[in-house]
Image (cartoon, rainbow, N blue to C red; front, top):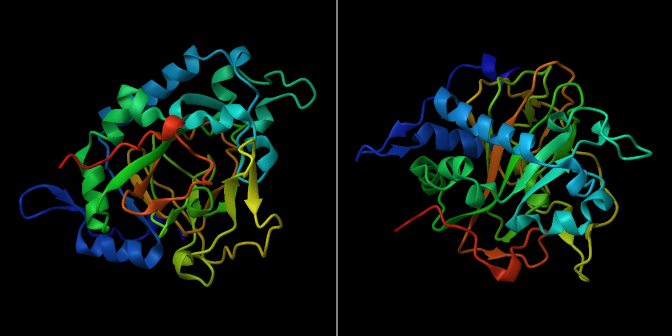
Length: 309
C-alpha cells in the first residue's frame, strides 16, 4: 500500500489561539505508526528556496579539496575519518559510493551528482536551512504537541539521492545513530522533489517502534579513543522485519515525522529524476545526550533550541 494512495488523515490544525498545532488525530496516528506524513507543509516557494540553496552548495564545492568520505548506514569504516567526525560544526560533503571509481577515487559523474548528502550543521550556518529549521515556529509547535519540553536541533542533512547513482539506504532506526537517555530523537524529513518508488522514496514499517527490542537498537557510536566509530554490539543481530512496509510516495514540500525506533529505509534511485530532501533531528534538551554519540560539537557548544521562551 502506498501512503499517497491511503485515505487522507486529519490535517494539522490551528490551536485555539490561532497558532499551528498537530491535531489530536495526527498525534494518535504518530503514536500508532511511528511516522506521520503532513502533505503540503512547505509552499512551493519554500521548497524551491531550499532546493536552490542545496544546489548552490553543490555548485560551489571543490571535490578535490575534501576527503573522499562516503556515507552509508552499514559500513562503519567509511564513517571513521576525521572529516566525518568533525562535521557537527560544519557544512561537509559526503560522496555516493557509486559516483567514485573504486580504484582511483576519481569522480564517475559530474560533481553535483557525486554527493550523497551535505551535513551536519546547515541549520545554523546556512540561512535558507536555518529559516525552515529554527525560524519556522511550526517545527517547535510539532515538538510541543509531541511532548517535548526543550527541543534542540542536533543535526541537519541535505540528502541528494542523485539520478541513477543515488544509493540505497538500508533499513535502520534513527535511534541507532543518535541517542539520549531517555531516548527522544525525532526526525523531520522534507522532500524537495516528488517521491516515488522509482526515484527512491522512503519506506517505513508501521508500528515497528513498538516491537520487542525496538528501544535498544544496535548503536553506532564514537570509539572510546575518539579516533573512529564502531557499532555496538559489533555483530549484527537478526535483520529488521520489513513485513508491512509502505512506500511514502509523497509530493515535494510534504513533511515526514519519524520516531527514533521506527524502521525505515530507501531503495536506490534508478530513475532519471532526482530525489532531493532536507532533514533535521531534534532531541529533548532535558534528556542526557550520550557522550559517546558520534556527533559532538566542538568545545561542548550547545545545540540550538526551538523555543525562544
